[in-house]
Amino acid sequence: MSDTIEGLKGYRPQENRAADSEHQIEGEATLNSGSNSEIDPITLREFQTYLKQCKKIVALVGAGLSVSSGLPTFRGTQGLWKNYNIIDLATPDAFYIDPGLVWQFYSWRRSHALEAEPNDGHRTLAKLALNPNVEFTTITQNVDGLLIRAGHPKKKLYEIHGSLFDLKCTSFMCTYVDHDNFTDPLTKELADSRFEHVTVFAGAGGEGDRDRPPIESPQFAPIKQIPESELPLCPLCNLLLRPGVVWFGESLPLKLITGVDRFIEQGEKVDLILVIGTSGTVYPANSYVDRVRFKGGKVAIFNTDIELLIMAGEDRDTWGFQGDAAKLLPIALAPLL
Ligand code: BV8
Image (cartoon, rainbow, N blue to C red; front, side, top):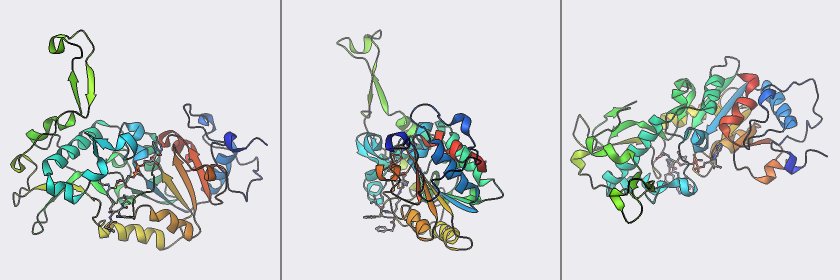
């Protein structure tokens, strides 16, 4: 039987195993998109058979979607900046204790996001959002702005954790917010926070030993002590500005949460949720998958790391597409693009 676990890079729900041949696979040409992003043709056919009759689809996006654009995830070694755990820096406490440190971290992320280019995964979701025959919305946990730069219509996109390119005043009395501020660096003192590497010249000769290739020493560029007066300040009240992102321990913007709830709970039921490049560890973002399941919707996971149980077909209403989301999404969603 060919489709044992190792043969299957994609999974297919039990009930319609008897794949019927007339359902052509669209996007066949690039079925095996090289590297380790292969899709099992039977899986793809059944997924696309279901996809074509979907009226309402939602996508839940995480850091994995922007990996092939060169941006790090929050897990493992990538989740470190100057030996700080990114999750520890994304908190109100960290900003309160050392705003200079946190601003150097966000200035670095702003620079990298500005240097990055949207990939085929971002563009695929943007195209799907423009398909008039499907009710579609993207819920992104990413703050890098790459979906918008890929042409994703803003009114079908919920940036539930905010954006690196929004700034807001830290004062409770001041309502100043600056949207889509792409200035980089934001202040002179933040200029070199974009460089995470220091070039050192190995070997005894040190500085002069230029013909030996310099070794890049990541993360050791010293953290600068930056006085608050040299950090981004509010033009209205001259108090500190902060990145317009949602930090751990902070509630998500009500307007956004209500918009997402309305899409999932009202009108047609959501037929399918695309779970793309997310570890599903952060609440409430990780709750949307179960809410769609609970209402009878099916799940398609696009991730380099998918549970064997799902790949083995144990989970009836879930497809697993293992590999780089930027490569898999254009193939899997081809019928609706
Ligand atoms: C809130 C913005 C009310 C900032 C972010 C205890 C138990 C449960 C929950 C909690 C708890 N204690 C506190 C909480 C609540 C907390 C939470 O969930 N904590 C977690 C860590 C346990 N949530 C909150 O605080 C939220 N607010 O709940 O308010 C409240 C308040 C207090 C207490 C109770 C309730 C606010 C959460 C938002 C925080 N801000 N970002 C910034 O970015 O700087 S979260 C941030 O981290 C991201 O936005 C994202 O959400 C998350 C990272 O997750 P992923 O995006 O999934 O990335 P990750 O690296 O984890 O995984 C990458 C995946 O990609 C992997 O699966 C990998 O295999 C895959 N991949 C890699 N390469 C590829 C790929 N896939 C495809 N292709 C590839 N090429």
